[in-house]
Amino acid sequence: DQQVKQNSPSLSVQEGRISILNCDYTNSMFDYFLWYKKYPAEGPTFLISISSIKDKNEDGRFTVFLNKSAKHLSLHIVPSQPGDSAVYFCAARPAGTYKYIFGTGTRLKVLA
Amino acid sequence: SQTIHQWPATLVQPVGSPLSLECTVEGTSNPNLYWYRQAAGRGLQLLFYSVGIGQISSEVPQNLSASRPQDRQFILSSKKLLLSDSGFYLCAYPPGDTGELFFGEGSRLTVL
Image 1 (tube, rainbow over the protein chains, first blue to last red):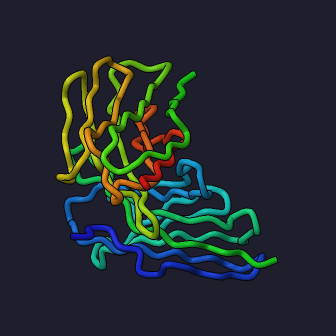
Image 2 (image 1 turned 120 degrees about the vertical axis):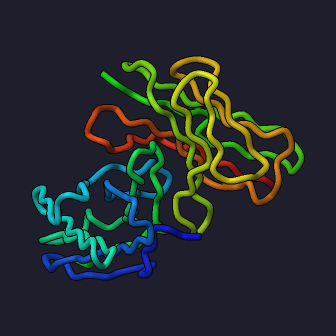
């Protein structure tokens, strides 16, 4: 049972435009959400997070939006750069636990 | 400063052979520790997590086991590897109170 889903396995965006990566979840007990970026043969690196008490968090070019009623999370990257090309994972943590559940990832390709 | 190390970085093993992957964390005490696996074309699957010495929670019943013999050491093992155990194994811990996980460099296991 995949509790965190990234339904788009890949996404291509032109340099300078906005990249929007989506994530859906099924467990209403999740209270903390994260986005990670991963290059091949490396560990994922943390990008940005959001608590369930917020609906938006911004850090430079990265903004995460949370729609709790729709159980939907999105990451916006503006402007997109070729160096942003990587696999992006969303993750969620159930309240009161130490578990982090990851999605299947979306491969972003930013075209120069 | 806090760091996390994994070894070996790459491992090629025959089916039926044993496995031992090691993860150590520096600069912190009594961290929560995690083992994840990224199989080909799949997301990050939580395998085990530990909240203290000797305390292991298994998330997916399978051919693997984990142990935590010391506060900052987490070991992933198998007595007899299967082809399906191939993948990229990642150790992680939360370095602070902000909630995100920090990942090691990963160990690539190929079972032939």
